[in-house]
Image (tube, rainbow over the protein chains, first blue to last red):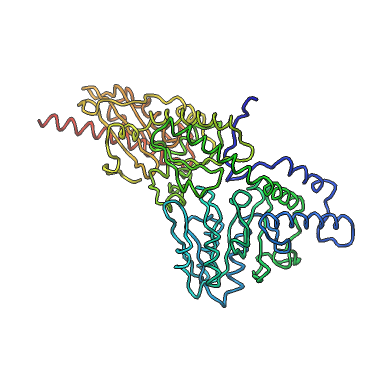
Length: 405
Length: 131
C-alpha cells in the first residue's frame, strides 16, 4: 500500500477519531438529537440513556463508578473545575496548592490565577528524567495544603509520574489529589483506587474520541466537593451546568471502551514502533539525545534533540510529516519549551527538539519512511549549520561569547 | 504558520552555502546570534583590494526565515562595495521575504551578520596596515 502523505505523528496534540467511535456517534448527530435533560419524551430518554452508558464506559476505564463522572468540554475545563473548585470549596481549610513545573498550562495558569487571589502555590521542580517523586511531594506538604495537582503523563516528553506512590503520601497528609490524566489514561495502567485519586481530568480527543468532550472524575467515597465554575440548570449534580454534548459523550465512552480493551496489546505495538524509529535514527545520526525518562514513558512518545539543527527549521524540512518542536521560535519570547528547561536541558538543545507522538494508526512502513526522512533532512541541515561545522572543528561552543539577542 | 514562497525557495535551495578561509586577509567573517536563542548566522565576505565584495558564503542554524534571510543577503551583497553593503537594512530583507512580525528578528540578524563580517574585514585591514 502506498504511503499517504503527510504522515500524522503528533498524537499528543490530538488523535484522529477512530472510525468505530464515529459509527457509534452517528445516530446522535442525526436522528437521536434529544436533550438528555428532557424528561417527558423519548428523544430525551434516549439521549439520557446514551449519556449514562458513556458515563459507565469512562468510569470502567479508570476503575470508578458512573456516578463519579462529570462531563465537561475537555481536559482544560476539567483542570480548571478541579483546581478552582477545590480551592473555593476548601478555602477555610487552607490555601496551599502543590503542582509541578512541567504541568500543562491548563494547570499552571489556573494555579497562577489562584495566586492572585491569595493562594500559595508550590511548583515542584522535576529530576533530569522529568519525574516528580513522592518524597518531594511529602516534603512540600504543609498543614495548609489543600490540593496536590500532578499529571499522569507529560504531553511533551511523555514521562509517566509515579502517581500511586504520590497518592499515598497525599492522602496520608489529608490533602486532595487531582491528576490530569489526559495524556496517560488508556495508554498506561491507571485506576483511581491504586492512585488514591480524588479528581481526574480526561479528554476525549486524546484517545481517538471527538474534540469538545472531556470528563472529571470526582470521588464519592469519601466524598470530594468542588464549587462549580459554570452556573445554570444544575446539570451534573450541580457541578457543571449546561446541556450535555450527547454525541461527544457517546464518542468518548466508545473511545474509552476501545482503549480499555486494546491498551495492553497496543502498548506493546507502540513500544516496538518507537524502538524501531529511535534505532533507525540514532544508528545513522550522531549526537541525537532522548529528552526525559526512557523507562517511565508513554508507549508512543519519543522526544529527541538533534544537536546543531534548530527544531523549527527542521520541521519545515519535514513537511511530509506532522510532528512538533520544543523550539518556540514562532513565539515572540524566543523561549524554548518550559518543560524541557525544567528537565535541565540547555536552551541550545531545547531549541533542537522534536516530539514524535506515535499513535494507533501509525504503521511500521510509516516509521521507516519517517526515520529515512529525518536522517536525510538533519544531515542536510547540519551541512548548513555553523554550529555543526564548529563542533566538527573541535571548537567548544560553550567557550564562545555569544551575543544574546 | 505559512511561509512565503520566497522563504521556501531560499530554504529549499539556499544560495552560497559554505565556508571560506577565515585567515585570508580579504575575507571578513561575521558570527552573530546565539545557540540559546535558536539562531546563529555565519556570514563570510571576500572583498577585493578595491573594496568590492566578490563572494559571499553563509551557514545558518535557525528556522526557515533565518536561513532564507542569510541566503538572500549573500545574493544581494555580491558585487556591492563594502559601504553599499553596510546600507542593507533589515526592513528590506523582511519586505523581500514577506516575514511576519515574529520573524523580523531573523532579518535583523542578517543585517547584523553583514555588519559583523565587514567589521572583521576592516579590522584585518587595519591590522595588516599597521604591521
